[in-house]
View 1 (cartoon, rainbow, N blue to C red):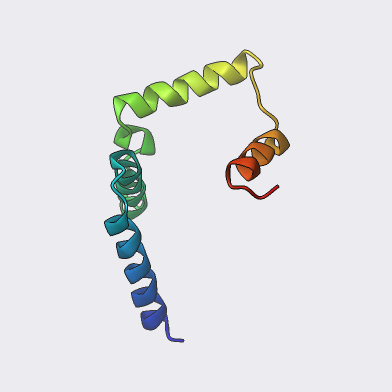
View 2: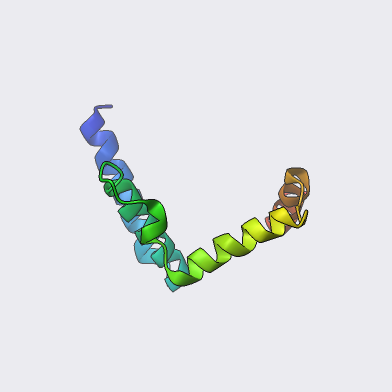
Length: 87
């Protein structure tokens, strides 16, 4: 498969996923990721692209880590597997 064909297939899949979601939060996050990736060669810092709410959540997470409030990776994986019905 050529790079152009693979790119076209990936674009179609991404387009389908965007069209099928009605979740504004997911769409905003996808938009933010695209903006970060598309402008990664510029000098703009990723922090500047985040919304105030996203910045607050990052700061809250860092504070939780500083306070020793951590959840082990294996615990998170177990919870995700339960939510997905994989246990």
